[in-house]
Image 1: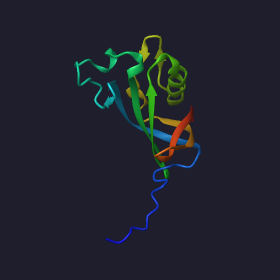
Image 2 (image 1 turned 90 degrees about the vertical axis):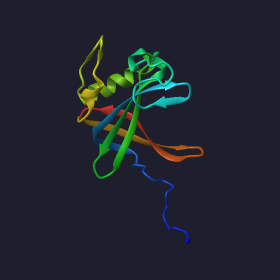
Image 3 (image 1 turned 180 degrees about the horizontal axis):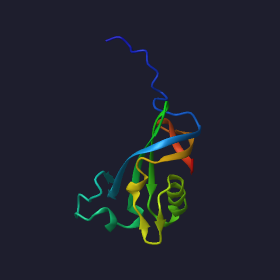
Image 4 (image 1 turned 120 degrees about the vertical axis):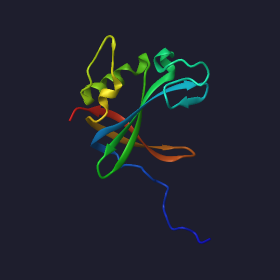
Length: 135
């Protein structure tokens, strides 16, 4: 078979900068051992997303940036990340209070995001969100 002339070394990487995107999907994920389950339930004991310790929960969003692609972003639901979660919620216009928030209210909302590019050993360049802001 002939060699295929296609540079995939930076596939899917959006250049660093400020963008406006639309939050398009959401998945609840919990960690069981080393595995992140995609449906918000545990494959070991049947507990739901809300039943797990703070260090094992995340919200996995996809954000569509017109003409550039999709950014996948994980919001880890633990006290040390509360400031970044709050920044995301404010930027997306999702109401919250001391009792919590509805993460599904973010889906379909426009959000400003500052994207950086990091080089990961054994993987190559990838995007990360360094900041969210209201548009």
